[in-house]
Length: 193
Image (tube, rainbow, N blue to C red; front, side, top):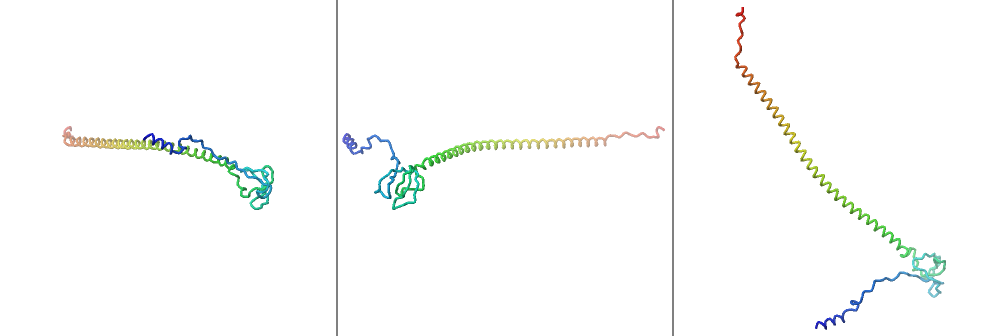
């Protein structure tokens, strides 16, 4: 049963599935138009002009044809619909490629500058964070030092008050003691006389 099923799948499968893939190719754009000896296709072909070749227009148009002089100096008639005032894609393509390359280069430079700017911004943000941490630490140290200075000043004032109180107390004590000390008696002047 399995053998029959595999034979059916092999027969029903498209032949392209099992064939090797051919490399992809493209149709060439070598396009040209014929130059006729007169204003119509019934006139003899005197040459051809490739797409993108410059031509000179003469002021003569009949029906669907216009009289021209090609880049080789041949005078003839071509279909008016094939004459354009714009250069062909074949002429413009290298210029467009160059512009595209220039735009890609500019885009790459912008992308690289953006990457460099983003990296610089990241480094700057890290530096700002470090500086903020240092500033916070410096503020804490300043506040601590201010507190210590205030405490020292308060201690000095307290000591001054303490010393002043001690001096005042000792002075008052001496004053009290002096008041209660017996006074020396004065000798009467008459006694010596």
